[in-house]
Amino acid sequence: MPPLDASSAISTPVDLFDDAVVADPYPTYAELRALGPVVYLERAQTWALPQYASVKAALSDPDTFSSVNGLHLNPEGNQWVTANSVLATDGLEHARLKRVLSKELAPRAIKDLGDDLRARADALVAGLAERESFDAVRDLAAPYVTDVIFELMGLPDVDPGDLMKQIESVFDTFGAPNPRVYAGLPAAQAMFEFLQTVATRENVRPGSWLAAAHAAADRGEIAEHECVMTMAAYLTAGMDTTIHSIATAVHHLTADPEQWKLVRNGDASYEALFGETLRYDAPIQGFGRRVTADTKIGDVTVPAGDQVWLMFGSSGRDTDKWGPDADRFDVRRPGTDQHLALGFGAHLCAGNHLALMEFDAIFTALGKHCPNLAADPDTAPERVLNNVLRVWDRVTVRPQG
Ligand code: HEM
Image (tube, rainbow, N blue to C red; front, side):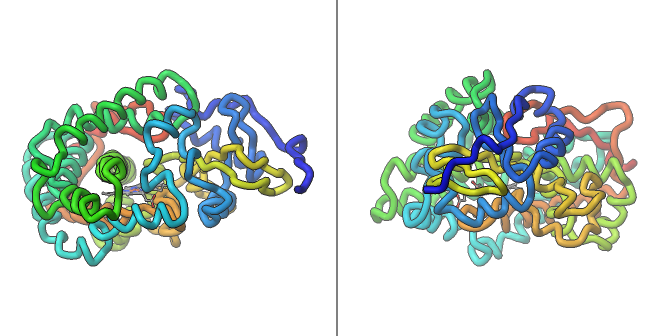
């Protein structure tokens, strides 16, 4: 075994989950990146990987950087929230669980959804275009995404409002212990109870994602408790991530009308807009892993059993990867599809094709009905603090400028 040289490691008292850091994490991320590829976070008792290269290397080596018992920076989250889920398994277990989701989310499975997604977006945006102003979160992204995902999941009629709050809190449980983590744990419990009592075989729509999860359990491909975790994966992974990335794109395009013009005129594709939005402001700012063997990162050996925090949000602003203007939002930036905000490798986001289709549908409709879309000068955008999600409370815009 190589000698542990953790003494040569740089450690910092920075709390990544502190309110002020969560509100504007990018200056702190720049400080951490300058310290090296791996930095010890004293409060979280975890190694942070702030640079693009170190995050990508860890994602490329799931045998060493395990998702089992490693995603959350607190034991309760690892034991009660994601254990036995597709996110928190490795190797063959992970492949078996992912197969059930991928069958529904692969490009060939969703290729016929395009017309429906565009029609829904068109109808919603045509209505919003009549207003003097609207909120890109509550009026646009949230109703659109919940409508689409609840329909595909085959959920019976439920009030999306309550569920959305719960799901947002579930993301809080990934952080290092703080009040948001402990408020999130009961929310996760409530979400599982909802799935167990409401999303039953009898209640879900035949032919839907959830019906397919139940059918996989009936065939013995997954166990009953894994079925609940599979349903939870759709619910947690597929909603806030997309909602807040749409709102982020609206915010940046209206903050810089030149960028909106490029997108509206087709000089930058919706795919480029999607990539640049996720690079600039990763909806999930970080997730953990547990190191399975003493592992050298730069000059430091991280001991087996320790956790690392993969800083997706920081990796998107790394000037070594993106150049000196990494802090600028630019839909013409080359290579934005190389961002890590959808993960990479074995755990690459299963819903990335669907998220892009939703983006395409929304911005096609905005280009058609709101060509002069502009920020509302009377209402500043506001955020909600979350341990890992970049959540918008509101992004108010004027559809006709
Ligand atoms: C812009 C929107 C989205 C973002 C930013 C996003 C982000 C991510 C990230 C970072 C991961 C990797 C986690 C890791 O490596 O530990 C992931 C995994 C996952 N995502 Fe997404 N996601 C988005 C949309 C969706 C949608 C729409 C769905 C499904 C409806 C979805 C389903 C999943 C699933 C099932 C996984 C687990 C994959 C695995 O563990 O192998 N995501 N997502």
